[in-house]
Image 1: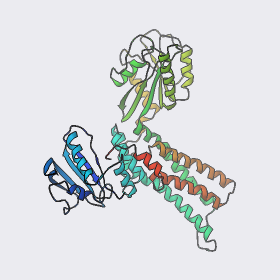
Image 2: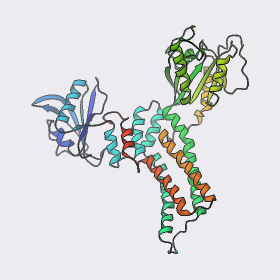
Image 3: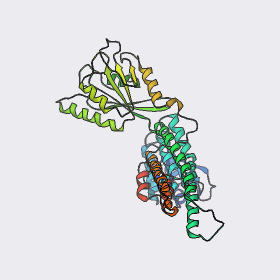
Image 4: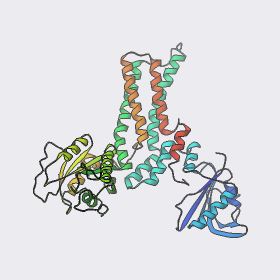
Length: 448
C-alpha cells in the first residue's frame, strides 16, 4: 500500500460533475503537477479553484479538494478533483493523473485501504457497499447503523467477554501458585457461556429481520399454466411486465419484478407453468422454475377457483410444503370447483381487478412479521456470511455445554472458547485472510 492510487468515483457519463479520487503518500504532488495553482502549502480539508493543465493547454476548469493524513477516509493523503461531467473530459484528467505516477485503483481499493489502515472494521467496510446498493429507506438506515459502528460494538462486546474468560483460564494454567487470582471453574464457564448463548441467539433471531430489510423477500410465483401467475405479477408490481395470453406455456422463462411496502422489498419471480410437456423449450422452463424453489423465502402457489386440483397441483403442494407459502386461489369470480382443505395461508382473489391483492399483501406482512420489525434502531446483523459465522459459534457453545456436563477440564474447554473468540474476530475483521479480503472488495465498484 505504499503506492498512490486513483479512480473515477462517480458514474461515468454525461452529468454536472464527475470526481476523480487520488489516495496515497504522493497524491498531493501528483495532482499539483497538473494543476494551475500550488497545492503543496494549502491547509487540509480545503477546496482550491483552478484548471487542469497539460502542456500549457487548459483541459478543464475544476475544484480540487485536499485532505491530508490521517483525517481522511483511507487515513492517507487524499485529493479529489471535481471536474465537469463528461466521458472525454473525465478520462483525460484521469489519464494525466496516471501519467504523473498514480496507479489505477482496483475495485473497492479505497475502502480496503480504509480497513487495512484501521479507519473502519470489516463490518463497516461491507456496509459501505450496502449503503450504495440500498433500495429502500429501511435498508439505507440499516447500512448507516452498521457504518456508524453500532453492530461492530455489539460483536466486540461479545468478543471481550470471551477474552476475559480466556485470560482468566490462562492465568490459572500458567500461575497456579498464586492464591489471590480468580479460580476458573466449570460452573463459572457455564454461567458465562450461558450468557453468550443467549446473546448470540438474540442476535441470530433479529438477523432474520436484518436480512429481510437488506435483501428483501425472494418470492416465487408458481403454478400450472394459465392459472394467472403472470397476471398476478403484473397486478402486484402495477406494470405489464409479463406477457399474458390464454395460450398454455406462454411464459417459458422467468420474469422478475419488485415492489416495496412497509419499507421492505419484495423480489418477485414469475415462473413457467408447471406441467408435464414434450416441448423441449417449455420443459427447460419448468425445470428452471422448480430449481428456484430452493432459494425462495416465500412461494405464492396459484390455483384456479373453477378447476379441480390435478396431479401437477398435488406435486406442487408437496414440493412447497416446507417453504413459507401462500396459496392464492385465482378467479374467485367464477364458480368454485376447487376442493382444497387442511391447508394454511389461503387467499382468494382474481387478477381481472385487484380483488384479494390487499389480503395477499396483508398475509405476507403477517407471515414475516413486517409490522413489528423495528426500523428506527436497526442494530441488526444482515450478512449471510456473518450469520453463518454466528451460527457456527452457537453450535460450538452447545458442544461446550455438553463438555461441561461431562466434567471436561478447563484447559480443554478453552480450545473451543478461543475458537469462538477467533470466529467473532472474522466478523469485525480483527482476524482475516487475504483471499477473503480480495473476494469481498472485488465486489465493490471502481473508485469506492
